[in-house]
Length: 284
Ligand SMILES: C[S@@+](CC[C@H](N)C(=O)[O-])C[C@H]1O[C@@H](n2cnc3c(N)ncnc32)[C@H](O)[C@@H]1O
Image (cartoon, protein in one colour):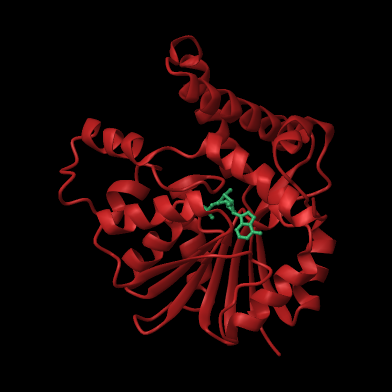
C-alpha cells in the first residue's frame, strides 16, 4: 500500500471512532432545548458539537480576533476551510462574516456529516464541500481570499506540497490562518501516533515550510495555555463518565478520546509542547 493510502486508512479508522453520528448531535441539541426544526450554526458551535479543533469554540473566537487584525472577510469573499471535519469552523466563518466557504476534507465520512449539518442550519447556499487531499485540491489558482486550516497539517507528511497548494489557491495578498501544535512530539504522544499519522515540524521548520511556499508569516500567537485549560476540563468530564459508557461504539469513542487527551495533556503540561495560531500572507 502507498504511504498516502495507508495514512487515509488510518485516518478513516481514527476519525470513524472519534466522529459523532448525526443522531448523537441531534440528541445533544434536543437535550439542550434547541428547536431542531430551526437550528442555527451557533447552536452547534457554541456547544462544541461540530468542531474538532484544539480549544473548540473558544479558540474559534480567538482565531477570528487575531485574523481580523490582518483582514476581515467581506460577504463577496470565498474562504477555504481546509480539513473541514464536521464543518463547524466553516459555518462559524459564514455566520460571523456573511462570506461563502468551501469545505474540503480527505474523508467522505466527515464531509457527509458536514453537509448534513449545513443542511440542518440552512446554510447550503453559502457553503459547498469537496472530498479531496489538501495537497491536491483540484480547484483553480487564486480561488480564495483566506484559507483556514485548524489542526490539520499535523496529519500531512508532505508539508512542502501542502503549503505549496495553499499558496496556489490563495489570492495574491490572501491570508492563511492556521492553528497547530509544533514538534518535536515526545514519547507521550506515541499512543496517539499509533492510531493516526501525527507529523509535527519544529517551529523554525514550520516557518520554513510556510515561507518556502511564497507566504510571509505575519504572526504566531502561542495558545498552549488555552488548549491546556480545555483539555483539563475535557479530561475531568470524560474521567467522570468512565464507569457509565454503555454502547460498544460509544465506549470506543470514549477510550480513543481519553488516549488523545492524555497524550496532549502530558505533552503540553509537562514536556514543553506548544500550540499556536499562525497567520501568513501570500506574497508571490
Ligand atoms: C483535528 S480534525 C480538525 C477538523 C476541523 N478543522 C475542525 O477544526 O473542526 C483534522 C481534520 O483533517 C482532515 N484531514 C487529515 N488529512 C487530510 C488531508 N490530507 N487532506 C484533507 N483533510 C485532511 C481529517 O479528516 C480531519 O477531519
